[in-house]
Image (cartoon, rainbow, N blue to C red; front, side, top):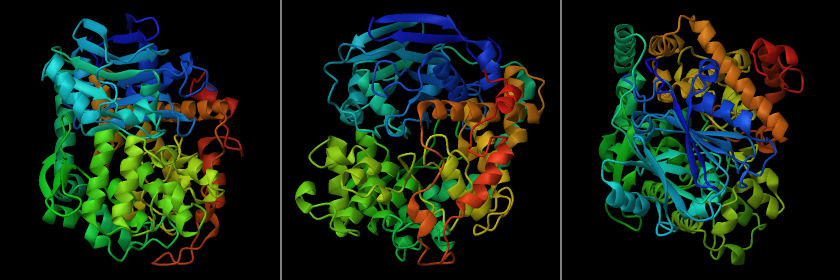
Length: 600
């Protein structure tokens, strides 16, 4: 094909061991783009929204986008789509690295895994040769061990996506890890893979991805890359300090959550866990994904002390969750905990936030020390790392923590202390200090999430416009646009971080020339709105709870910083948001809206 797609979907029935190749549904590809959107469309057409996320009826779909593997900037992304075990929502976990492009080079836009295998298996793909192989000897191995063993068995040139014992044993926030360090990270999609006894996908391809209009596509890509290179965030900031540069920035506006969001949003030791400190003391080199023009990844090393280790990261979210959220100012401990998450394939946002929730439960006397095995207090770096390792390995109290903070807090009588939305832990921005991000958490289709509509851009960074983080005016309207644009970006197969420097004109331009479309920017953005509404419709059918925030954000005034005294004014914004989306007052897409978007 000559339009950004390679034209074939692999369908793997794990129960029967049957592998078929089928033509890509081009009507769906046109309407839902690829990756997140197209994977969700395939899923919604084939699966019951009420299915058990860890049961045979929950398909697992790995899907690339039309820009994945092309010369488009940062085009190394794919999405893993399934019903998420942690939340019950439609889950689409986005990952970079090189796995997605390699899948397309082998000749496949995506893979649909059905049912459950009787024994551990891995899928082997070498261009047209596709087969299921026994993975019994790999079961129980961590991400690094699995990747090394498969590279030795199949060849160093193969790209590998796999799970660890966390996914095998049903940790509800287990990830799928590819290229050792890149994660399809949130919602527990790794547990879905484990429930299917699918240990890994191994792929090598010798093909290429062709686009519709070569010269025009080249010009669009070159222009986007230049814009990113010239932008202060994507051209210098992220490259120099990684996403951890946000620690001091967010702390400065009083939005860095401390001690499970209990003790304000200003962390006095923020600089100790900042990107500047990480770069000065621990950075070995940058690391980028396929086609990356930013290079925000960090290879870091803690050279001495109790947390001596080496690995990738931490990113801002892990630095916060294992830092200020646990009251820990030891950057070495945060790095060590993050390295464990990579090695064992678990989501560091949920992991750190669950430790923080356990710390609050312990300090208030609701969680007995004998249940944990040791004291677990805010600020105790050693205990934080120990709790993380127990969860990674599924040992002792780690099995309870592996259910996520909501189920753990509910077990001990205080579900309100889980800082989660739809049972998924919120990221590193306090929605009381930054009002729009609170609205985004509440309305996110996959639970507490910042990368479904990154309102930190306008509210903190002033991109593309500057908005006061403490006000509500204008936030519902801009959030709707951000959410739709993010759905489009995720579905094309390029990295969301590019949107710090480029926007709809550049994304639509690259997409248009790749697929050979003559649609306007606005018509292309409408695809993002269609994806968002399809996800919302699934969640309603699945019985996902309504859009809200933890009681703490709605009732407890912030104690420190520029936003002292504030709560999140969700109800003020939510009514406007639903109206902006054309939904009814309960947040349900109307028949007229679904018809307008051609959602059947």
